Image (cartoon, rainbow, N blue to C red):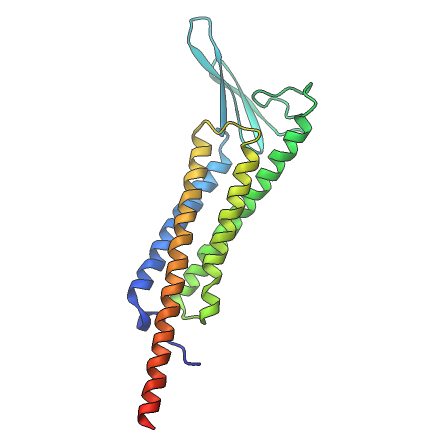
Length: 210
């Protein structure tokens, strides 16, 4: 089976792959910053002067406490979610919610790793011409990434309110990952179409020469 270089097939596909890399890289940046910062959920308390002040922030891994908006400390997530907003160690369901947060953390972290792998595969496709079935790896990995992100956010939303910037950053990265998936799938189909078209032209040329 003849192989044709990507540039010889369609330069527009190459540009779209670059767009995929850009959007995917932005997605990776947003989700890494989002999952690493503590403000997925922020809670506030009323103050004596009638205003309010930050009291707690939390993400899937740890929680931070504040006194009148002044930072105190951060502690890792415990079995009974000690220090987490709206939770108390006296709540019998706290252990179950801890399991949900643990699952959310795992799913979102694995999604980040697969997203990074998706970018590497997309870069390889951009630099080197691969067989048609190999090009499917890029949209497939982006698809798995989006599935894991969806599952992770769904699990986490059972325990946290997602009312601050960290959650917004991760969700923005999630949307960019979906955008990258659509472009990657479109480019894969485009490359496959042009290769098939080129192969048919080569076959017709051979038949004419005979």
